[in-house]
Amino acid sequence: MAGLKTIIALSFVLAIGFLLVILSSALWKNYLPLLVVATYVVAPLPNWICSRAANSDDFMENGGSGVVDFGRFMTGFLVVMGIALPALFAHCGMISYSAMLMSIVGGLLIYGTIISFSMFFQEDEEF
Amino acid sequence: MSSHPFRFPKPQWLNSATTRTAGVYISGALFSLGFYFFIDASTYSKSARNGSTHHITFVDWIPGICSALGMLVINSIDKTRLGADSFSYSGNGVAWKARLVLFLGFALLAGGLAGSVTVLVLKYLVNSVVWPTLWFGVANVVANALIMMRYVCGVQLREWWEYANEVDSSAVLWVAQNMEDEYTYNLAL
Image 1 (spheres, chains in turn red, purple):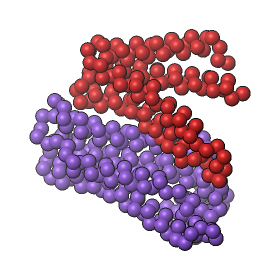
Image 2: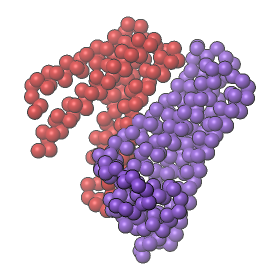
Image 3: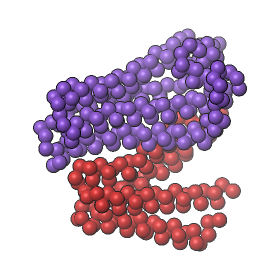
Image 4: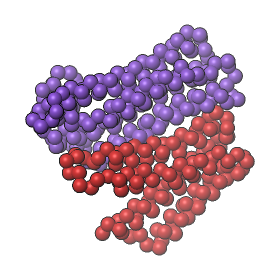
């Protein structure tokens, strides 16, 4: 499934995403949009950490433990933060609206790459 | 599935684990959205675009703090403890304590929303503040409403799922014992 073509396509999308985010900050000499990259890189981490931290043998607990839920909650929080942060900066006049657009699109591309990459390779690990 | 009096059946997809996971993600997203609405208002208050003399002060923060605390309290309660009195081996009054703390959480959440409306009216509407500055008050209300929505989406879905699968019979028992208001009707399917 996860062949060479997938990897090439994913890296291409990742490069475009980084290009957009770096352009959005470098064109205006204002490096606040780079925070979007940091947010999206951190976003999948709570899920990974909390799925490791959860007890696998707590069969008494129904429907996933609280720790796993907390990780998902934090991931959802961070993903929306990646969109909300540029919008906030633009609304408060710290970056321009076109920079906001570029950093949001670039951030979504980066996050999409991370998610699809982990999806492709988790399948290989499990089976 | 005729355990509720309504003509429309509860959709099956509400019972799935995927829906529940999506609910948790959505709840995080809604909380984030509410949080950043308010952060946006406070940043705008400090930014160069704010031409007025009004600013976000600590008073504006209190409703948000109440809502966040209420959310924390509600989610730290193990919902299965609500029916713990029917267990023979649980200590005395566990369910009573759980209900009390849950009530405190709901009160904090509702108090946060009501407080944000109070701030909007008393600090901004009464002083006849115009739009760009009125955003401070409106964003506060929106933020608190979203945090409350967060609860509705996240926890409600989880509870629906838990009760739907009847994984914890004592919790279902608690619902059956307390079928009085509309809220428990929701939980009881």
